[in-house]
Image 1 (cartoon, rainbow, N blue to C red):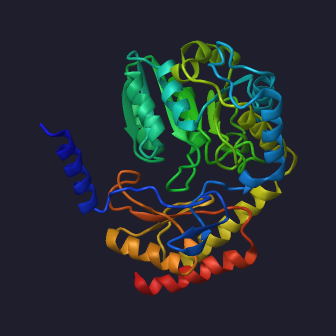
Image 2: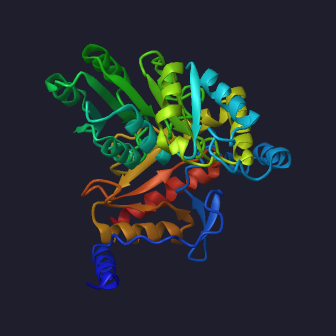
Length: 386
């Protein structure tokens, strides 16, 4: 068997179906403006929601972290890879989120594929929203628990499924802000169902932290800290840095320190990253003007796109999908935006379900009013090509 031919044919199949991915040639993908095909474009693809990745204070603190602690931790935290900045950051996050204790991980994906298998095994049943992030799905698979996916944000379907469950140990896990649709989970109803049927609840606040609930996330905004048992999120989006965290009770965090393989068997994040994470957290604690501006702009853009007749699903956040089911047309419209100085990525299978290919808009708080007006104007012009 020729393995080269096997993989070559697989790539050809992807290309035929317009599903072949490649890494775009971009010098600085988190910047507000990037160059695509030699064209300067307003960047509506980054998760740098508050524009903090180039914040001077974060950069200064990262430099200080290097000068004091060096470039690398050089070990897992349970060996020698710990330092005082880590302890300070975890205490700050736990207090900010309203939980007893916190643990920091290398990234969001590693967090979910470590925490879920650490908590659950074949004696558990996991109930997961159909549109949860891939890391949640993979974490559930790795756990060997029975994995049941309920229809997206369908509380009646979730209760129907959990009512039938005979397993005493149950976990409900969901994104709070969904990364591709931009809508928000029905957390109050989920918490009520969990209480009724004796389930733990875990949420992924990756796209909510720094934005909703005065930066604390959707759980805080809804007043559900006591009902949501495990609250994870990331530093790599609104907070403009890197890494992830999990907040919970002291008991559960201590358990994860002993059981979460992605924590135990990974070199801890470098001091520069931890220092910038800590500064970003302090910034959003002191001032939520950026998040308020972002949510206000998002509402204006959603209303404008709806008025033009675009299908933006049920977006309620800074993530706004523009559904273009025809894949060839999707790429033509993406290129139209580029030619007009705007970049919004084309998202397709397997990232989103069949027949929901889309342009995914990620708004950012450092966009000016004039730039927002330009976005609305260009999308208005694009209607003629649908």
